Each structure stands twice: as C-alpha cells, then as structure tokens.
Length: 246
Image 1 (cartoon, helix red, strand yellow):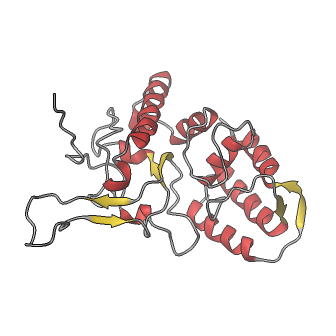
Image 2 (image 1 turned 135 degrees about the vertical axis):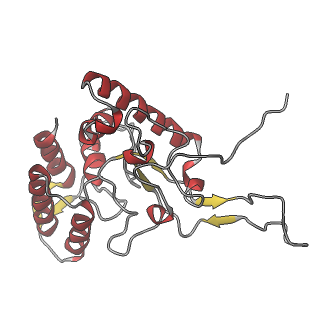
C-alpha cells in the first residue's frame, strides 16, 4: 500500500526557534552559532520544496530552495524541544524551527538524536523530581556526552573511537572552546589558546561564561604565532572535563 510522507507540518513554538542564522557560519568565528545547551547536531543543508502546486509556466522548481553553500553543521539547543508555556512536555520531532531552517532538521538521523536526548531528559527530570523545562541543562548535556551523543560536530572526530578526550571535546565545543570544526586533539596546545581556554574554564566554573564571546577569543588566539605548551589539546580538555563534571 502507498504510504504518505509528510515532509513538513505544524511545529511548536519553543523557547528557542531554530532559524537560518543557526545554520550558517558566524562572522566572529568559523562555526555556526554556539548553543551551551546543545543536545544534537544536524549536518544537512537547509532546503525547502515548494509548499503549493502553484508555479509559473515553464518554472518547474518554483518555491524550491537549496542552501548547500550557506549551510554548515549546527548545534540544536535543548530549548528547541521545550514548548513555550508548558513545562512538562518534550517535543523531539515537531520541534521549534522556522520554515527555512526546518530543511536541516527534518531528517531521521537528527530525530534519532533529539529523541534520545528527550528520553534522557524525561528520565533525569523524574530522578530530580522536576519538569523537563526546569531540568538543569548542564546535567542533561554532561549525561549525553558521557554516552557519546553527538552534541557538537567535528571534521576529525569519529564518535566510536576510543579516545577518552572525545566526550570532553564534544562538551567544550558547546562552551566556545573551539572556533572551527577541527578538534585536533593530538596536536600540541599553544600558549595563546591555553590562556583563552583557562579563562573560559574559570568563567564556566564561576557561571559567567559567554560561549560565543569565548569562541571569538579562541579565534583570535588561534591566529597568533604562539609557542607550544607541554599539553596536547585533548589531554588539557580531559583534565578540564574531570574538573567540571556533575
């Protein structure tokens, strides 16, 4: 029998509306906008098919939009799963996104991630005797990365590899420690980047961290000619991860 495929339908209006700006590179660093409560990623481009059967004569693709060059891998924030005004509901599929940005969300690999994140959020909320909307997003994020949920995209990280620094890299990419998509965990950490990371770690522990501002600082640090430290990038992140885990 035939089966209907619904590409796009009604969605919630969440506490964050994932939009086309979330799917494009920022001007301040070489990643898409950083979300400190990221629970999943999408690496598909934003695209949209026509929403009606109307088209001009001879224009077969009226209404079609494919932003392959503009789109880059993006973080999906937990807030996009939380409807406005309702504290005890999680929406991992019809989540909060604009029509344009929905093209990068509407994929089964994304729903596998958002569904898993919603499951962990529900379980943690029950354990903490709270609602999903009032759940500490840090607790959820740290739980997800321990199980190697892909909350941040990297060109050079394979989630199934055994490197113990991978969860740390995934986590700290949501906090602005990376200005691009290359983790380079086995490369030496430079003095300039170490300074930026140490400042970011201190701010994270104090609750004053602005991840996007830190990513901008890391961008500047990466551009400097700086000597290597005794640390590899991955080993520094692993030590930092051990310090902040809940």
